[in-house]
Image 1 (cartoon, rainbow, N blue to C red):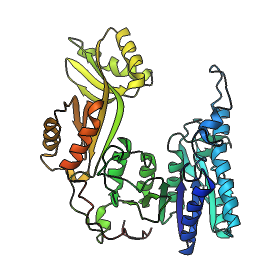
Image 2: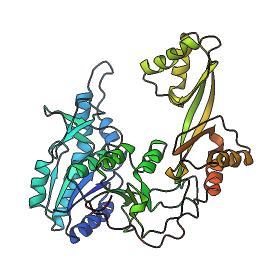
Image 3: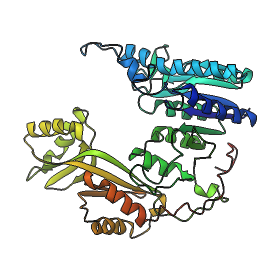
Image 4: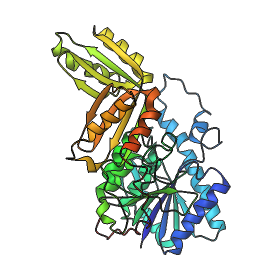
Length: 421
């Protein structure tokens, strides 16, 4: 039995017109003799009546009450409604279909309500249904504890559902459908010359996703990568193949790919830089990070020296961070309205001069670098948020990413679970 997992986001299923495109993708997979597991998100975004945020607005629990269990029961309803609606429409098209909740599909989680982690997938019921139906529609974003409590998976939960089911079922491919063409070399709302990445590695897409690219959740990529199940990110509204994600670009010799140092650029805004002055207080370095951890504040972009600690936090928690540090008698300075740009590419490993090109490009635009860091496949720079458009476009041009895919003439190959991944 050859299985394809297809995940459709909220905008893809929010209206009957949009769901016609969804049904057409499912039909094409069936015509290729595939069994299809369809994972769906809640229908649309607020103020759509069945969107998750709309459902949350129906209740007003007291902050003093621990109601996360009940909230998960409510939040899971959006995906359940979506799965039944799509099943009804598929049956009307003469397609043998049934619907399952995340729990019935075998998604087992811990009991961290509203942000549960999948601990195992038990796909026996799902496989049974696939033996008697062409399509099984699964409510995404949800699972259940071993005792049967309904849980939700937090941000990116439907992507995670699709990836987990794809791995458990040894699927031929996991397809993530969205309202954009696929993974781009940069955010096209900022970089007008951004190009579609026709093929990209798990590693590079993970880094791009963690650093701000929002088309697919990085946890879903990590899950697929562990078992080397290929992913494809594509548009609900076209038949174009989108972006193919696998272990290595060498798996696709028929695709004309220019050698590239940088695969793409991602960015994050609304960041505040915090400088903690230590003077002769090196022994108190650990107190800074302990204070942030105890407050549940995530820190990033960390530089430590004997005289100061520099790091960044999201702007909305910066006032809390500063207050807590000053209560510990630290002297603190902040730089608000910052943005983080990430240059991502496995091709930069061991290649000299990449950082120099980034620094020179920004200097030529009179853009100050407030902070920087690097790893073997990523270089990060912190700049003023007001310069984000100018910086992203200049860097994108410097590394020729607007030209990288001009010679792509062939579509990525049809994947196979048994191929040399």
